[in-house]
Image (cartoon, rainbow, N blue to C red; front, side):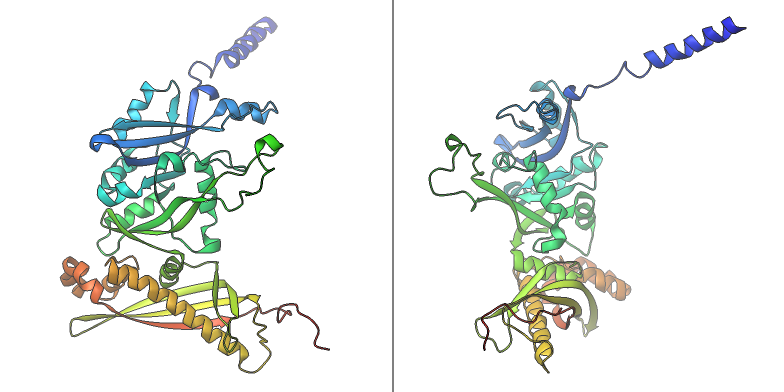
Length: 407
């Protein structure tokens, strides 16, 4: 009996020893893709830039055996008739198996978005089971090969650095990025148009101009360029038609009620050449459509609440009328930024990125059936009235900026 039990135990141990290894993929053999760029290729083809983590370099640096000048990522560039064709052709230039399940970022070049459109690109991204629909989908200016090779000092890869910046988009509220699934939803909507953030290369202002800061001087030099998120791309159907700068992007988010954080700076009332900066606590917006004699009106009620963040004007909230004047000035700046976004999107580019059509659809479903097919022509003529309720709270004990005593 004891012998039989011993034999069974040995068989069980053998099963544990031989199981789970026959189809294992080694880390060094797996190309973990963290970012993808898609732009115009030669002869009408599509060029795909696939950024993979350099697992060999990362594993060695992680163990304390750093490789001098070795990148933590590698870019592969390939062209094809379609995105799927190009990605399939990657097997001709690399021996590693590509895994897209960790891809957090897809960048479409501005030229491709304007000229060719993104519908064919989205068709592949939505169909491929490896592609994550919660990945960021943004527009890149200039060469994506250059954009995805800007070196950094903190994040191991350019794609990872851009993704990290996007995580904090609510803190500035100066651009409006979308996830892949949300962009597709807006593209398929009959009452909304899509938009997303724009990334580009800018010269790095922190690069010293004096001698003595280079690698021959014993310093690791600052990168010559930075990648920055700069504004919001606007689309009409699947093609990019223009973009909003940082102020207009904030106006877009204010009108849509999607401001969570961020600052707003405005002229201090009665204080020449002095500015006040407040920080948003919350903001909400409610567009209320009205139809009169076939004309569509949009009454937009915006409520913002903030606190004093930079009070260089020395505004004293305890003084009668001082706080209410500042609140009114804040409200005027909110209105100005919303109007700037409306002027660009509604008047110049004629794209409904504000959800006006959706608001009409909800309140007037019967009338919307008649308007729907003509909405692109009706939308630019919608008259928008903006009402802002502006509050400033949490002014704290500090009133003005430090200065010399008046004694």
